[in-house]
Image 1 (cartoon, one colour):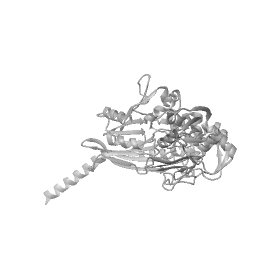
Image 2 (cartoon, rainbow, N blue to C red):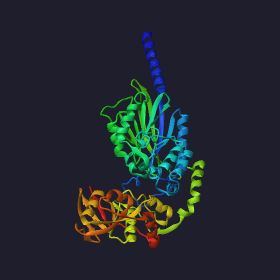
Image 3 (cartoon, rainbow, N blue to C red):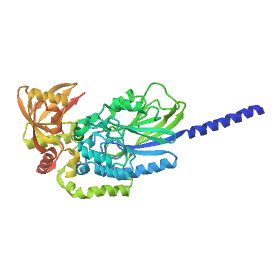
Image 4 (tube, rainbow, N blue to C red):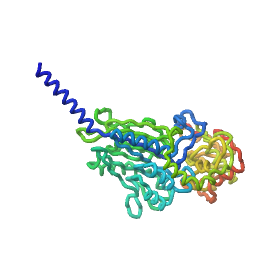
Length: 504
């Protein structure tokens, strides 16, 4: 009996030793993340008019949300809590902090950089919209960033040197965690890239970098401004990426997603790649909690939890960050606070009827006196909320420097453009069903293949959609045309008329 009790005591002792060892061989890493903030340094609101099943409708708060000073407060509270519990916490941004508000128009990303520096961001990468600046300004943003900027697929054309650090390896307890980044190759069409930056295919670059990290790092975290579909491809095609913190596609993943590597479930590690993304504009802060554990095969992600935290008015503003933002806002407040018209109702999407696009297209067509106007989807960036319309509101609608062009297209050419690019329109009604253009008219008359029609578009769309047909740039900014149109009309209602219908 005594021998049996002795064996039981040894077993209990061994159990406690194993538990203690397991605890000592696990570390906690929390990644707080933003993406596609697009110059939203101040709190903002969405319209009351939202599509019932949209990402905006799923937000817990839609009015008076976001703001870099609030993000800073919440992030620093979480960082402190995690540190006090013995863990490590990072605040990261996944790019496209430019283009979206007067801050970007006036300061070209420098205001965002300063606010992120004050908020204590640890890591980041660039998005395609950062390259909407000059290459000189891009390099200023890199030099002025206190966060470690990483990207493995962007290099300078003249020297072949990486634009950003390809990766950085950080010790988290006993684990070696590599942070790398990737930028969408579509950035190559933007001004700074045309001046001297080239981009390697995202999947190919990540595969090469993961190979380089083999033996140097235990866990790989990828900051990917490539979009959710590309992130899925990376997760499926590149073994060795543990976490992808995403951006570019403005995807809202409330609980993240795991791209599993197979059917097997393991007790000591996640058998897949964890993907997270926090929608847009800083209305929510992503939080990913990771437990890194040492196994027989080395360190691995053994547990995780992903969620999105509302940045609402209940969160106080960080005084230091607020002061930085106000320093940039004060000199431009009067200019962008000017009221140019009134929205009598929300000018916002209603299912597939895009009222804000209809407004811009109607403004261009009527101002230029042409038969039709074409605007690329994603080229109008924000709705208008019911009430006074300020210059700042219109910069959010059209934050780009695009001009308007005139073009002459035959009916056959016009129908080809409609089918291939599916633009927002004015003066045109069309319907595409299952990849076929089944209806198309100008001014109520069916489009005739041999007739020539006079139209307009913005310069960005024209550069890729109308190049083969020819066009003439008027030199007039699309934003200026929109402002002129609203000043003339003064009171605006949304246009919901079913002019563009896409089925499947």
